[in-house]
Length: 278
Image (cartoon, rainbow, N blue to C red; front, side, top):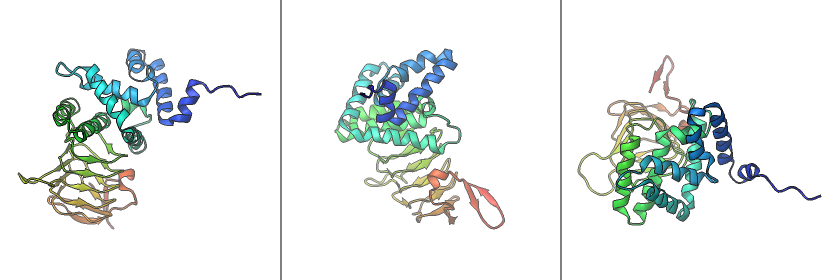
């Protein structure tokens, strides 16, 4: 007896489990929240791939009278078609938010509503444009991303995958900054320079780092892998691996406290007598 052909839902689940789950979540929303059902259908359920839904959603957000949504979508789709690694990064970023943010219960919530996630995906397209020497167009989108989402990332910055930008508001990442895989950062983080120097002038954030809200890391310095930077800290010197730094200026106040700070999101400094929130 021949096996029946898989249904569309089964194909989604086999090929792309993140997208399959997103569609199921979107269906539940459309049934329980009729007021936004048309939005959910237009943004998620009317599309066959996560990539198609993302380009549609970002085009609706970033299109304006200067560059309309249709053109935005065409450009973004071209980037995803040309560079498959962007699609992998999108899924890794979405999974990072789902796994690390205690306020998130579904994949579809950050996809629809979280400006940190959306700004990061739009940045990935600007980075593609920058690499193609379409720098003016990339800067146009950098400006639009900043206006719409409150996140300002230079298109030339190098950002890995599995990144969580919690809340997103006020994050600024400079031109020569590097952010490796599996980094978490909260609102108000700045990866900036220290003046008018030219060339390589921005921080290098290594794998697995957690940057607390309002943290400022300034200059061409390295924050070592699996370290933590406390909220409101100003980092002006290199940070060793697996350490916690805090203060203005920041200093080492202990070890990172766990193997993967970006995943644990533990924002307390432990000592023998007290827990200090960072």
